[in-house]
Length: 117
Image 1 (spheres, rainbow, N blue to C red):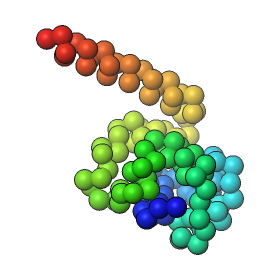
Image 2: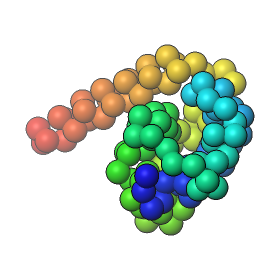
Image 3: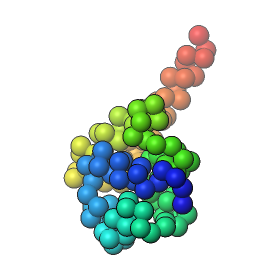
């Protein structure tokens, strides 16, 4: 699919402490599919790439066109993802979406306050 996809998939998955099997289960895929993508043995569909980018909360363009293992390209692998990774056994996807919504809403409120000053 793109130059950095395979490397980034493995990097992000390992950084978040997610096994190939856990990721495969979450996305309703075979573990071997994840392995084959990471080892560049199989091409990924656009739909699966979008699904992975959404799952990891990384823009698809960054996922496919930048080496995310280089610190400058991490774009603050945000603290929420670290929180989610550390609490993956107790947070549901709905919990994560609710937390993201609250944080984004608060960020917008703060931006409005700053712009008024």
